[in-house]
Length: 441
Image 1: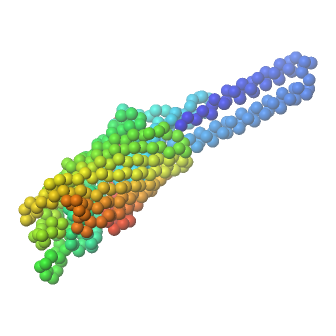
Image 2 (image 1 turned 45 degrees about the vertical axis):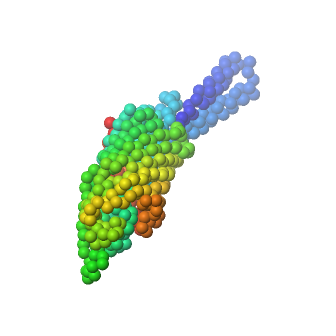
Image 3 (image 1 turned 180 degrees about the horizontal axis):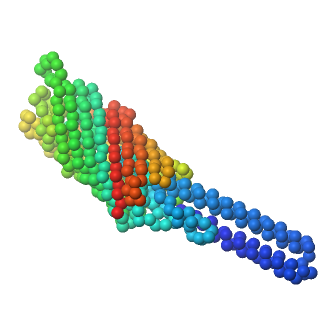
């Protein structure tokens, strides 16, 4: 956004100077100017002076509004920026490069979303994210030529007395399918290492490497054995997850009271150990490959994923509103076999359901170092097909998480973000906690 109020000042000043020159020259010549003309010139000088005062007040109000917007967008407002808006300097505010959440994130990981550095008034080498990121989609794109590295950890917990497991995970901490168990307590911890590179002021590239640790406690009663009591079964899994790569592009320039549009394209690999590789116990019901208990938990989904998305950021004093839509294409696999205690069992062709996601929220700057975000992240997971037909008891699953985020700038190049999520649907984790530490170089 360009604020060009100073251009009016020279013309006003010129008018005043001209009026004063005529007035004084008239008084010097005495008889050549009548009393009526002198009075008219004096009135004109007073009118011009009042206009000058009004313009100064308007300029001060505009400068204050601009600084509030900068804070809401997560821009560190240096003293030079305020000085640049005064008539003495005669400088113009430069346009800002901004973009938001959230999922995310990621927000999650949003959002949210939506929540890297912006350029206002003067180009800054530091990357400071003021609007708390609650979605996986970050809030502001990385400036051209700069690199940022983010370490983060996310913990999720869920419990249910009716769980359906097919044996693969499309979304982290959410396993979809069928299994006859009474109660499951699921703990998942993921450490993410993310690098972002600003190709241009409008485009950035991102790579993420997750390390996963999972632990499930399943309270169940053996099938067809007439057991009189429940049994507790514990399983764990750890290792590298599915590595991801994302490209983001900002379509338009940033301006006040106008939305900013950011497109993204995410690719998820199959580097993690998938659910068809881990050993599963089918001794209780060998005829049902979906009625099983995993002796080791997978760290990956087992499917390649392509996810296009669109994020919209609307800056308005004093808040920033953001939202986004995305569609996750989960590519099918052929000739899948399951590793069970009964040996290798042919599953066939597996086509996991695609996922439609959306998020929205708002961010508010509490001061020049702290910000607060609130948002909602939702997703609708489609039915899974095995060999062209719906899997047993397959149904569309609705996921929803209410997210709350806080961000604190520690140094000009480092900030700390905390996110808390509460599941609002039955299939969503009960609670998620996230901690992020982005550092720019």
